[in-house]
Image (cartoon, rainbow, N blue to C red; front, side):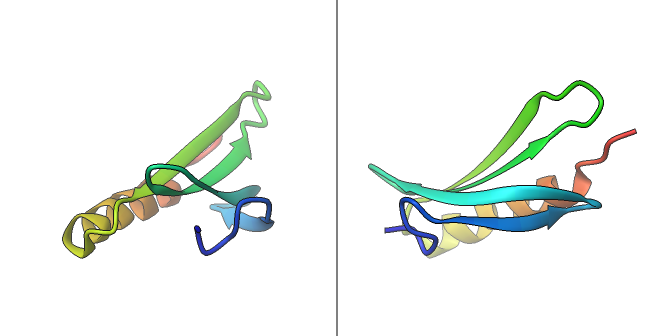
Length: 74
C-alpha cells in the first residue's frame, strides 16, 4: 500500500498554494497531488506511479518533484 494509505489525505504546499496529497493502489502504487487553479477553478492532478524498480522510480520521482515545483498561477 502507498505510504499515504488508500484513504488518507494530507494537505501539502505546491509553490504558494495548498494542495491535497493522497495515495492509491492497484497494479502499482500511486501518489497523487491535486491543486485547484484559482484562475478557472479547474483541478490539476499530478500522479507518481511507483513500480518498485528503484532505478525507474528514482527517475519518475525527480520528474514528479520537478513538475510540482514548476506549477505557477498568474
